Length: 141
Image 1 (tube, rainbow, N blue to C red):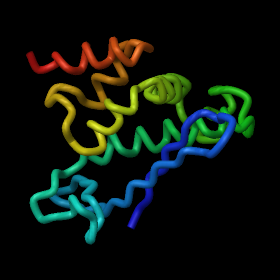
Image 2: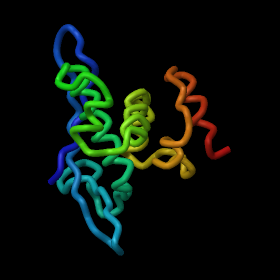
Image 3: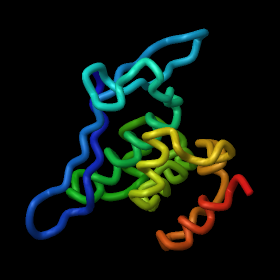
Image 4: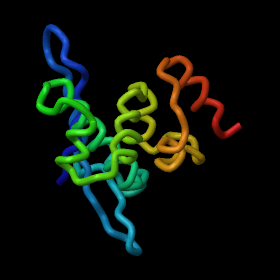
């Protein structure tokens, strides 16, 4: 079982951590994220998650936590540590601005059909959560 962790920015008081138990299944050369067995939504009809979006979200929140905790000074340091292209790191770090509602929709496969990792990487996402709700709420219209 794989755990994806999302933590909020450091705040006074208790730390918020979201743990999402998932199972990775390979089918036709693709990887799918499926809720772990024994979960309320872990039925056979559970939606399949695309691994690239979940991988991008987990990297994003991990890197954001490293930045928040001061373990890395900037995205450039993440680039050096991970051996990735600076554009990749910057595109993925922008996903940390997604509202909890949009992240939840991505994790529960309720996002609009046209919302993909490629779209998120290539388009500027509004910083305002209300603007995000308006944008993603009418994406399939």
